[in-house]
Length: 120
Image (cartoon, rainbow, N blue to C red):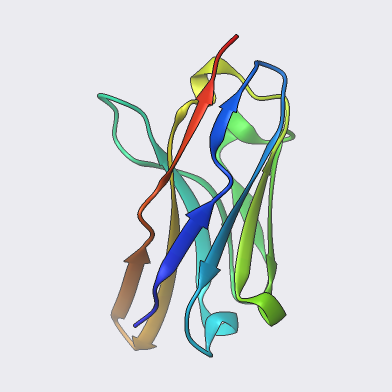
């Protein structure tokens, strides 16, 4: 099992930037696919960005060109660099770790979330 701790959220003005970090416990971080999700009030949780264990990335259309996901396996950390933030980016952001321990099984782990507020 892995524990995830997010940090880096806060209040930022529209057009500003934030960098979220998620530190994972355990020694097999490099085998996990990692992702950032967000959930705004009254809305479903949605995938923002993902990065596989091999480093392939994918992004929600709404954040392409503005957000960048990266990982540092030596530090057991995944990052989300968020630039040109918009009010609609405001949400609680959650870190996710996923792994297939065996064929047909996928385990998901979640952090506690970090609040991002975009407001002038």
